[in-house]
Length: 471
Image (cartoon, rainbow, N blue to C red):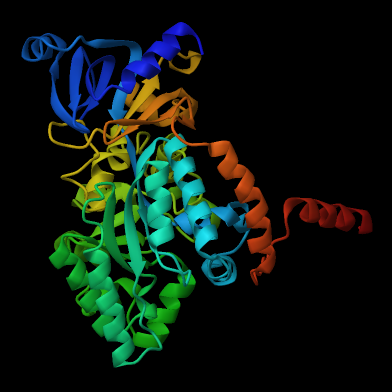
């Protein structure tokens, strides 16, 4: 590192800062000439630089020319314990949870859970995510290892406890609800951990459990997470078994509401859209999951027009906030915009908002993070704008969606603390983590009864070559 870089890194590690970036991403969009006062891990003051100079004369402004200070991204739907098998899902048909994720997660012990979650957290931080919303693991081990991994990595985490009760009796259901109550009360004094309750899919729980778990989350001010209407197979199974679609099933069970965060919602009817709006239910829009393994793309601009709350989620596919925003807009352009002549599909700003403040709201953290405003956590990204891709710059709001990249992220701050510099942790050894993951993951994947329908790319290439030769 050169002297200027070393000096900036050291300055950002101070406990109190007055930052003066060239651009600041506020609710109304990128704004020049602004400053931010950080203290105690929070955003203490925001406003024009001259005004903050007067209000905080004891602080020398840290000038950040050709840089943008913006809220960290919020991933509203992640599976932290699936990071060992990312590439195993490539080319696979829908409902891969049955053939890959359930077998893989079931093979993980506490150490593997820790490693998988810490690796996923590192990927998320490198991609600009300061908050991840974990939808609940299917592993039998407790969540302690996952919670520890996220805290050691330095990322904010909404941590879901899976509460499926299908196949259990009344005593088993009561035990699950008692565990849910302990989980909701279990993170006192850990400001980066936020408890959540989850049911994997509606058919995995009784109506009584769906209602009870959603109500418990609501009473605790937590989020209730569930996968809904992602694949045609799940919709048809629900119709055959109950005469109701999955979202209708949740509605009938009394599980919708402002506390509910439903993942995917790629196949929702107009009536279901209105129920989402009227109940205040939030949606995690996962565009990369749709392109990799889904049957449809959620109509996010329609949700926005109706006032349905939604944020962006990776579904554990790849943790890159800028590519996620690009995918979100591109998916809408291809599925909606081309057909109806909408050349903007959100005008850029819709996706930066969904990736930050609206995502925090969907994840139950509106009062905690997602925006640059006094009182909120200092979960921030410092972006280098002095790159060819943004020269000349005409519309920074649009450019963040279509042109910006994660290698422009100089610094990641979570709760005001410098966590990553130039893509790497400042206080723990990521290379050592990766080395252990390479060894352990091979053993775990080899042991898991994974069933891949699509061969890995070398085998597929060989098969395709054999077919050509036989013609």
